[in-house]
Image (cartoon, rainbow, N blue to C red; front, side, top):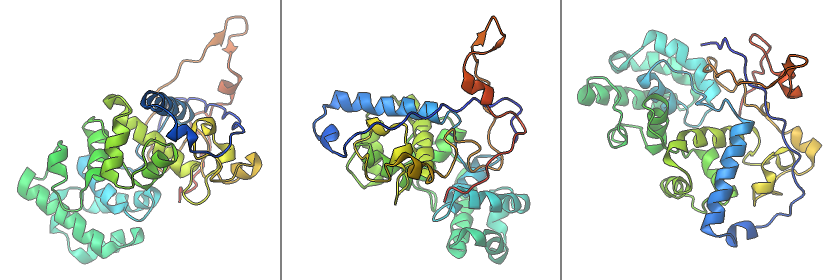
Length: 304
């Protein structure tokens, strides 16, 4: 669905501070200092990515559940190019469960591992029909019993559809949580538990979106753009990637505001109030004058 509102202007990224790569900030800081630094990072990411959201297109809980399963080992953007045809032909659990596997495979093929994914989504659909009358349950304990559904997938659906806060520990979130010094663990369940202890529960879903946005756009796995990162002064892993601002900027995969993201149908964003100068009746913030208007050209680059 298209937004008919003016998108908020992206915050102009701060120049990264000249900090030295060190783990002292993690090893030497108290738990209270860790909590404060973690929450400040979350606030900073909230300003950088005011429109952070799930980047999979979906119409209901079942479609989101299937889309998350299909997103394994591929990009959300790739999944979004496949699901319109998939859900037009097979809109619900009953339709997918009864489908000919060959027809599903032909549609799902661009996402990779299409035979295994076909078996997964059909098994998932059948389990929903047998246990929940085809409806997606709204409890973590129920979701993780479904074929192909783990805690990561369950938290995506719970946060998006049922407004149940939770952390989505995908590869991006786990990587950044370790770089930020929030955890040293590699196990997703332990990462989820340790990071959740640093934040109010109500913040966990948005925290996940913000961290994942940053991981896809700036803090890449192989070559993070440290020199173009607005939260570099808060990151003990600064220096693992490119620190030259110009070279780092060339590594960015999305505009800093996170718009339009990967979704073909991004959710509408709220209009943010902009202070107006009474004398000129113009926005006080110069950046607001450059805010993209509805209908402006949008970058369609892939997250990769």
